[in-house]
Amino acid sequence: MTAYNKDYKSKFVKEDFVYGTSAYIIDLTPNEGKSFFKVRLTLDKDKLEILEISIFDKNGSTYSYVIGKFVPNVEIPEGLFTFDASKYPDVDVVDMR
Image (cartoon, rainbow, N blue to C red; front, side, top):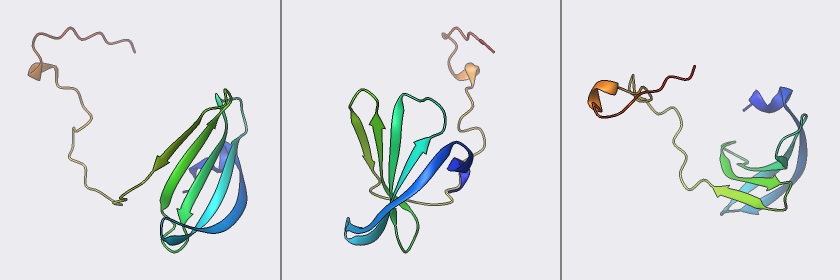
């Protein structure tokens, strides 16, 4: 979880007890203009896994995502995210690359 280092400033907010476990609360503030002004991460203190992500939008909305189950290192089959046009003969494919 270090990919944010170049695009965000991080700030440790506090240690808290949430969802039945000890957790770290960390705020990320984007370096460049985004449609949001802050992302708050709640991390399991022992496992360092994300428990919750809250995104604070500039229009006053907050979007929170609670991670109910985290499964690391899942095997993903080759081609899972590849569109196979032969499976959909009646579809017009428009490649806008």
